[in-house]
Image (cartoon, rainbow, N blue to C red; front, top):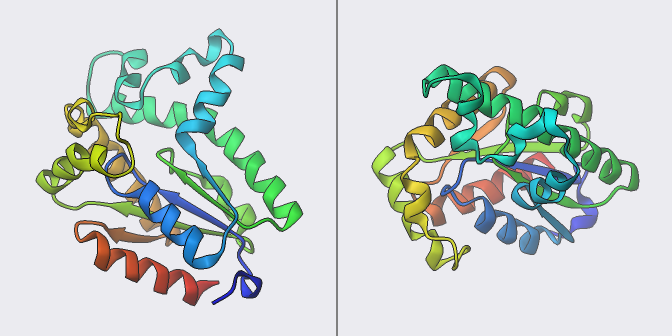
Amino acid sequence: MGSESLDKTIILIGGVPGVGKSSISGYLAHELEFDIVLSGDYLREFLRPFLGEEYKIAMSSVYDSWQYFGEKTRENIISGFLKQTEIMNRGIEKVIERADKNGEKIIIETLYFYPDFITKFNDSVLPIYLYIQNEKEHKEHLEARSRFTHPKSHGSRLSAHIFEYREVMKKSLEFCETHNVKTFDMTDYLRSRDKILGYIRGEV
């Protein structure tokens, strides 16, 4: 299937670390002939030097952002995530506006998947969310990712924060349920990869 038949030209892929966002993004770009893949991690790094003191929370990793709200509780983990998401999505929204205006074929993958603004782009954006249902499986995927897409990023550093990541995941899944965003359990990567490609081809 060539990309010239696509109506929705922007694919927004959400998920916490370890669920396969980078791998799926590269695969979809190849299969659908999308020219641009943007990582939310790199967009965040680009924004950080330009953020003032009032946005200091954006300098922290999402698993540490609860510190700006008090003790480490589920509520504060989500508060930190949502505040970082508010900052990040200002940039992501502008990227989508530019891609939409130019009709560019682009895939954006991001941890900060709580994008209420996507309702403005229903005609051009197709959002999906990736997750791993079982915590043990998720931790194993995190620790193995250095063998695939992140060779210099040791997964053990991230798996130490599995609790925080999964609280963020649960919040994003709530968003998906509310807004009818399609979700995919990535426990079996190859099987899920085929399902995702089939779904996207059916939607676009």
